[in-house]
Length: 106
Image (cartoon, rainbow, N blue to C red; front, side, top):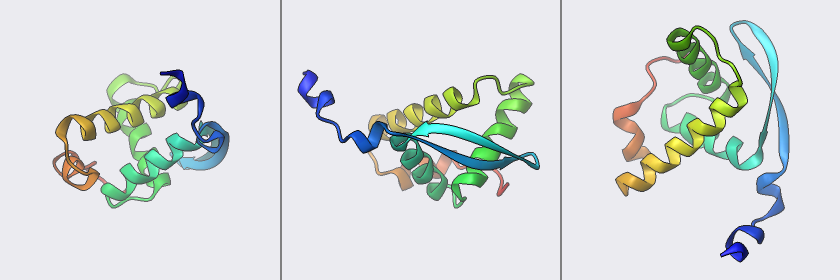
């Protein structure tokens, strides 16, 4: 079993920091490349840029919980939940995300 995971391309788990504008403030978020790829896919499925998606997710989590503590971890969990929904539904990302589109173009 470990061979499946241990032989993953190191580029996928290499961390990369990106600057994102959230609520008018530029901030840096550091995630592994695989998470950046997943966020880009989710953003495209919602007709948003990755930065727009991240800003919208921040807005939604802040509205819901009053704050966005550990936002990078929230983004990782978002990616995993997105992938799980795709797998569970047995459809490609366009079909799965259509009824769950994010309601804004931040």
